[in-house]
Length: 66
Image (cartoon, rainbow, N blue to C red; front, top):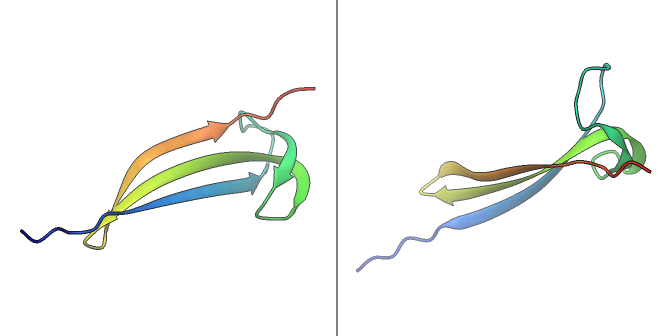
């Protein structure tokens, strides 16, 4: 039997708010710009098998309102 490896990739993405229409935007630390700003953060999980990428899960993290 020839087993093939599946690679799981976890990606955290942060984007600065552009405009005024995006939901779930709040002032929070954004890794991609290395500062606190208005933005949105999401976590993404992918599986890679034979150079084919499959999205497994996406979760948007809503900042707590204080």
